[in-house]
Amino acid sequence: MNSNLLVVGSVAFDSLKTRAGNRDEILGGAATYIAMAASHFANVNLVAVVGKGDFADEHVALLESKGVNLEGLEFAEGRTFRWAGAYADDFSTRETLDTQLGVFEHFDPKIPAAYQGAEIVLLGNINPGVQLSVLDRLKEKPFVITDTMNLWMNIALEDLKKVIARTDLLVINDEEAVQLSGELQIRVAAEKILAMGPGALIIKRGEHGAYLFTEETMFFSPAVPLKEVIDPTGAGDSFAGGLAGYMAGEGKTDSSTIKKGMIFGTAVASATCEGFGTEKTAVLTKDEVLNRYYMLLNLVSTD
Amino acid sequence: MNSNLLVVGSVAFDSLKTRAGNRDEILGGAATYIAMAASHFANVNLVAVVGKGDFADEHVALLESKGVNLEGLEFAEGRTFRWAGAYADDFSTRETLDTQLGVFEHFDPKIPAAYQGAEIVLLGNINPGVQLSVLDRLKEKPFVITDTMNLWMNIALEDLKKVIARTDLLVINDEEAVQLSGELQIRVAAEKILAMGPGALIIKRGEHGAYLFTEETMFFSPAVPLKEVIDPTGAGDSFAGGLAGYMAGEGKTDSSTIKKGMIFGTAVASATCEGFGTEKTAVLTKDEVLNRYYMLLNLVSTD
Image (cartoon, rainbow over all chains, first blue to last red; front, side, top):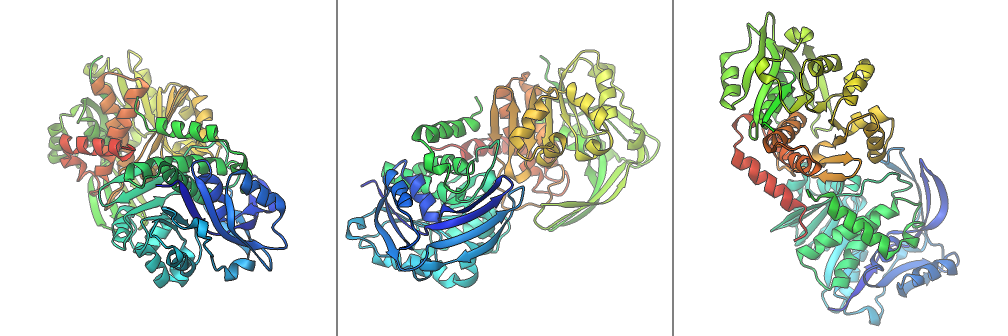
């Protein structure tokens, strides 16, 4: 197995407001977090779209400094996707203040020839119709990891169900699992969602950790108890990126690798929360990721 | 070390309403759950008060069948403590519908001579002034495990602080930790609470598991993901009882024993949630406790 990870998703500018302060139009977007998180473990081949006029060289340079392959980053006429949000002081809820899709509205992902043959693909949280077109454009069937959100359950459920049926590992949060399954208990929700097709399901619970469910196994990875949370934006994407990157780097998709990948994903996600947007993720070292990984293993050790 | 656990707390009749149904005036009270949970691991010496007229022989027989020593169970003139509550469908909140203190209002715990010399005492959630009087009446200083609640932080904070200063292991939930410390991040809250005196602090997070904090260590025990929750009443008490009972049975109070005790406590607490009141706890076998214990160890194993 090669150690290339194909990542498809959004690159954006985010305006963020939390109890710790605020930032205007800083680099964000699911694919950005995913790519940065995965870059600690694997070669990342990015497919995304940004605005020709407003996506600065410094952002390109940052992603390239992480070793992210940008051959699939399309520069289109128009403005880069923008999102603005504000979090409650306890981070339990967030309010979307503004969304400007820009060039992302007509995102039609093209897969460069050099990206074909990826054995793992991570479909970031985008329109399920676009996720389907990505799968249709891959010449060989990869191991498919899919992220999504409640928005698509509300407005594109049929397409989403098609994506899920073609997914090997679905990564959603607990509210989404409840909505998708109609079940309040996540263990029952997991059974129903696994019956929709994916061989494995991760249900994220934010600061409360994440569960893995398969036919054979159930696993829980705790979160890092943080002394300070600056901004949780991108934590879920960082988790998925660390997970998928670790799997690609190891060249394995068995459940033990997924479990360890969840802990690496948690390690990166915890760092993401300690800065605004990608500010902390951008400077995170592999040593710090490893330190957090071993801290998390130790956190559940009864020794 | 002997393997006796001294338990002081409430015995009550609870009226319970959840999405799964309801029950009227069934056996409950913190000390009841604690004693039943601890009885799997240790000799339990109970100190509590019930009403002479309404506490039936069947309740005495049930506790005795668990091997609970009832020499310290006082039968006073009046009615046994009654509590009525109703839970939201997602169990995130509960409403107290009625509280009748009865004989519990003037509970003045007497320690039988045979109970003296206990090396571990668990002070259930009662008025901190009463908790202090228990400590004053013990001839030898035991390892003190204390439970409490936000009510006492509101109306008896000075006494509660005195109890905490004499506590070795404080067991509270996350909301109580936030209130007691004035800190939103539980890791920071834990630092402040440890500075109040206890050598160890457990912060319970319900279905999200529990943290242990000491000067030297941080540990997380996950909850059992349940397929069905009938009634969470007494889960926190069952957790504390299983924990304290395991420690007493092992005759150890080091942090590795506390960690394993938290997992045993979680095992019993998960069963408590699968029946109304003490209905499931009353018929729980040691084998089932052990099965859940190993399931919980396995839940965090990356193998």
